[in-house]
Amino acid sequence: MTLKQKRLALILGGLILLAGATTLVLTALKDNLAFFFTPSQIKANEAPINRTFRIGGMVETGSVKRDGVNVSFKVTDTAQVVNVTYTGILPDLFREGKGVVAQGKLDTNGVFRAKEVLAKHDENYMPPEAASAVEKANKAREGATKTLKY
Amino acid sequence: MARTEQQSNDRFQGRWFWRYASPAAFYPVAGRIEKIGWFLAITLAIIGLYIGFFRAPTDAQQGEVYRVIYIHVPAAWMAMIIYLAMAFWSATGLVLGTRLSFMMSHALAPTGAIMAVIALWTGALWGRPTWGTYWVWDARLTSTLILFFLYVGYMALAASFDDKKKGDRASALIALVGAVNVPIIYFSVNWWNTLHQGSSVRPGSSSMASIMLTAMLIMTFAFWAYCVAAAMHRLRTQIIERESGAQWVKELVK
Image (cartoon, rainbow over the protein chains, first blue to last red):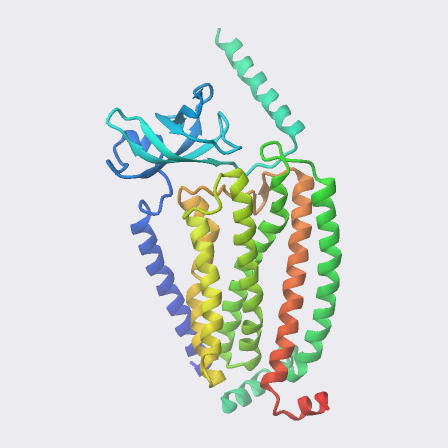
């Protein structure tokens, strides 16, 4: 081995060890690095009790109830649902059927009392006409499956 | 060092890339690349911004504010790519002992840091109207902030040695070790729950309307060209500074 090959081997070996160590650390921290808990995790009692944490999921369609600045809605990950209450102004992109991340605590009744609500938008970008076309297509498909069922 | 360089010169004799590993030979080449880079950067940025701001439609979800994507995403990509390029040149410098490799790495660092700042800054301005906050400590945002700190740390360490060679080696280690952060940034949105959305553009697929994607890719090429031009400009300054004792530099500045 020439000096150059030795140095290359040293650097590559070092990088492989470093990558391995990083992978181990990240795997160990996997749960702690989560920005939010999903409704399924909360129902499985994986979320901290009596401590502030974040919940993330979709705002269930038709679940938003407003009473002045008091808002209540349901957060779902399609498997489980958690009730959320919040007092304050919601972000512009807060919509039914769209992503949301809320920070707060669970009360004894299992209702999540949010102190802060953030909207989580998805990675799709399209003009409004395309969006309404997609929506129409989805509705038509749903309609078709319903007809088939009955 | 001189001995190894002599050996390498013998071993690689006749190969064109080795010839351009000499700062004196690469200096005029860097000048030409810089000129082409500026031209492409300005032309592509005009085309990209025109399509992005005047031709591309508004977004169904976000309205007009999504247009910050034409700056945000190219800057974020460049911040990651430049770091990898820096790590590559640092490794090359450590293995082959070539002076130009370290200079290349030093020339890239400030541009990479600027790209990281642009990505973080535009991201904050985008986050406020869409998410409802300028900043959250989620995995994507935090790892990008770490990337910025790595750039700053690299530059500070390289500058803190009186002996340039020691500075080269020490900072090269930061560049190499810090490179593990780049895949963490890229995959953070898949590995963890984050407020930041997933990637719109992945190898082979995209979830953007095609005109929006076109504008973003043209802007990405414009950013590439700018970063190459800026790095080449800085590289030429570095070469003159470090080779100031050489005969050709003395003749050049005469």
